Image (cartoon, rainbow, N blue to C red; front, side, top):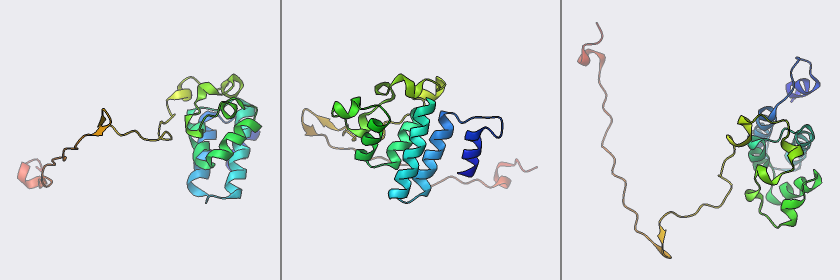
Length: 157
């Protein structure tokens, strides 16, 4: 956290980008237990990310992992994006295109969509045809693993 704050102050002659914010939110999601402290820290990071115009795909994914869905939608409204909340959208359906341009204005083109996952949408079964579930065929795997010693191939010379 200290290093990120030094980066934000510009002590290294650099400034954070969308991936930096995404990685900090990822650290919050992976390393902090769910609770009020994680929610507060992630909310502060996301708010400063929105103010800097650096909300990319990774940042959006990781803030959804950090916060419960209701709090995520309330945070968006608090940051100035109440449209998804007013439209009754679910948290997993909010995309970068639904956010104000001011949130994404400083994001490099490659960081906008490449890192955005579809893992937050409910999974649809692929085996349903005309309302009936199809029988799944078993996956046949080849038995064993072929291990060859170096002296068997003659390549150890």
